[in-house]
Image 1: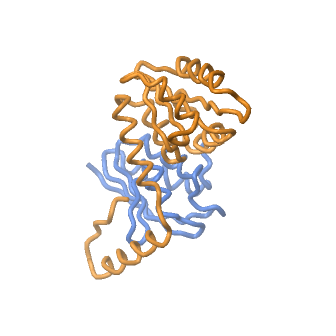
Image 2 (image 1 turned 45 degrees about the horizontal axis):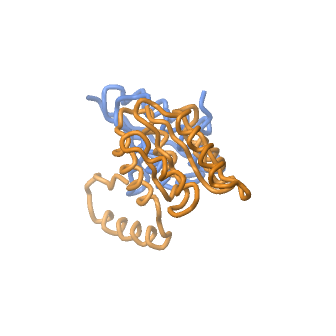
Image 3 (image 1 turned 45 degrees about the vertical axis):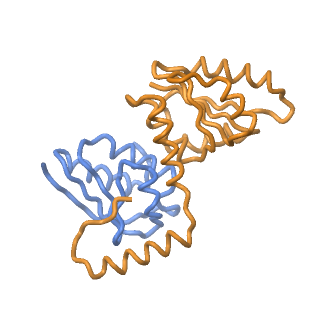
Length: 152
Length: 90
């Protein structure tokens, strides 16, 4: 079990968590820690540090932040502790859903972070590209009797 | 190893949206069988939220629920029932 923290600006952390919990509810130990506009870094660091300790599972804690270079991310990086606290930046909704799902499985912390990073990148799509690709695929498939389909 | 499949039409107004996909993956995860949702030439893994959402199945879409494994029949029945109930978990 790995504890999960969503660290982000304003209400993004709690909003992202609410949205993820539409898909995966009552799973894992997750907390949203948002930084307020007028909150100083030291105060946020103390809150984040406490939260990391609170959710920590036997597999450690993953801190998922909204943006590399932002305060939640910078503060998160100061808490990085190899194998115990990992930080993954650039959070999106698919990444958080995947993180929550994997956090209750027998996965090593760094491996989880790497897997979620790749998953998040794959989840980004440009509609024109997707539609062009599926049009091409169905043209090919029309002439193919095989029932084997792409496992997307 | 048994195989099972059944067609079902999406009846709820919002189609297979995020919450619906979450419920579907939760139900599929109860079975050891591999479960897929087939639509035209696309195939989604019923145990992956992103895969299920990638079908972009709107109201009226006909899906072929296909399962392979010891409890394939039960898996297909449970998913068809979930879809027919408009994705409300019982």
